[in-house]
Length: 178
Image 1: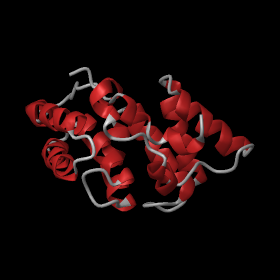
Image 2: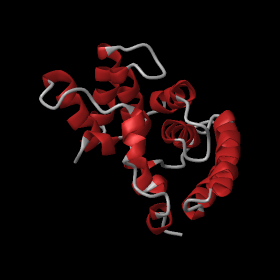
Image 3: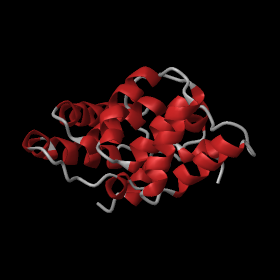
Image 4: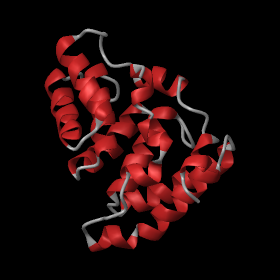
């Protein structure tokens, strides 16, 4: 698998990749917003207006502390799906989700630290996030960690390259199980 595709692991099945199990009561209150946002995103196809509406619902859930919504919203900022591409905003949303243990957020945050996009470049932080995700079984993070340490394929692909090679958003509907 190409390094440029690793960032997009969330695209393949965002519902499965991000369990909706918020620990706090405020995050539980955000669950309907999260569910609605994911449904919209899955059905959006390439329609920017629907993607933007999904981002609005996911932002509401993310602001209430829903770690899954934070991870999806961070990914949306990395890829520019439904929002204007913004690596700094992506890092801001990925951080709390990664800290809550979401492997996709941990891997994506590791990519940002490895490439210095949206955050200050930090080999140590990239390694820590890749290790955290890999310890939870993320094959993408394990591969990114190997590349980061051994450099046999160069640095992880910058998010801009990953976004350019992302699967067509219309594939989301086929992978959401709805």
